[in-house]
Image (cartoon, rainbow, N blue to C red; front, side, top):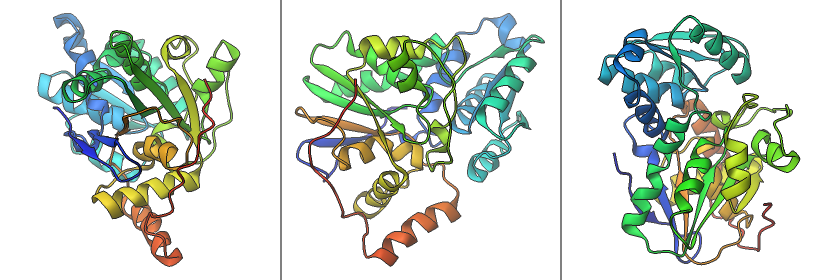
Length: 312
């Protein structure tokens, strides 16, 4: 479903594309529905398998339930409790396997070897095309030139937006990773996929390494204008700002685009849109983030507007 575009008070002519109001609480439902809809009757009958930190799994579970497709969702044992609880409400087989996303992904791929289609959260042309629908909605509301700032985990969203932007002269796309997980920017810099260290992060939906044959780094290297990353403190600041100034709940992954703008890490060139991608955060974690702001007297007001240090 279309998501709203709302003005934000970070700086003049900056906007939030609020995709956290999707049915599953995340933009991931776009790509999941696109991939599921592309399956033929035989593939639908065989079912699907998805690996996820949570949000992609919710998108696949939502779409598979609506389309009557059997689905198995594999998440790591460390997945967000809020996302696991939400997944348990769907009529899908939920498997918790491994201590990180890579282990869950490897297990899901092995399950798919028995016949079901594997739907990657990022390494799938149909998923990438589905995420690009955010761009189509923006084109109905904004006139180029403008910049879209969006999160990068596996790169499906930024790859989709960047491909869409090739048909819209004047639209720039900036991708934002968490400092704790920089698989895509490393692959872009080195010209190939290599394993990188993954640290604990509030942006759990962005954490993890890439499949060896992932198509997103090459797309991003060719068509994305800039890449940057944000710290855990910057993610927290953005989450607090969204709650205090806009009444929006955002998980860490959903707040990184705004975090980069607030921290001055994006070179602003006219109208700019930060995509808020998800709200699926466990309440104790959200409470801790917000309480820390109250204890420090903050409330999301410490905003840096200095020039950024964007990486291509």
